[in-house]
Length: 184
Image (tube, rainbow, N blue to C red; front, side, top):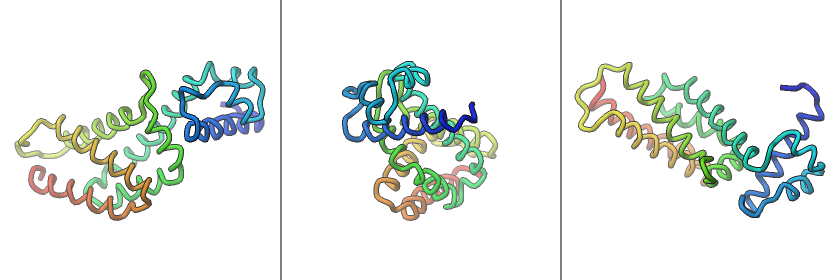
C-alpha cells in the first residue's frame, strides 16, 4: 500500500462516488465513465486502480468482510454478553451507508451477505467446538447457519432503523437461551 496522499485521496474518492452511484443509479447502470466524471478523475486513473467496476465492487466487499471478521473475532469471547452485538452495530454504524448499500448488491459471485453469513457461521462453529456441549437437537452447522442469518438480519435492521441496543438485547437473549439449554 502506498503512502502517497494523492493515491489515497483518489481511492477514497472513487469508493465514495461508487457507493453514492450504487444508491442512486444501481450497479448495472453505472459505467466507469460515470465514476470518473463524479470523482473528477480520468479513465486511465480509474484503470490504474481497478480493472473494472466489478473489481471495485469486489474490493469494497472484501474489505468489509475482512473488517467484519476482525471485529467479530476480536469480540467473540463475549458471545453471551449484549455488548458483542452492540459493539458490532456501533462499529458498523460508522460505515452504515456503505454497509447497507453493499449488502443489497448481489452481482455474479460478489455477495456481501453470503460472505458475512459464512463468517458469522464459521466463527460460531469455532466457538461451539470449544464448549462442552450437550446433545443438540439439530446439527451444529444448522444452528450456526440459523444464528448467522438471524444476526445478519439484526445487524441490517439495527443499522437501517438506528436501534442497535434493542436488537442486540433481543438477539443475545436468543443466544443465551440456546447456551443455557444446550451448552455448559
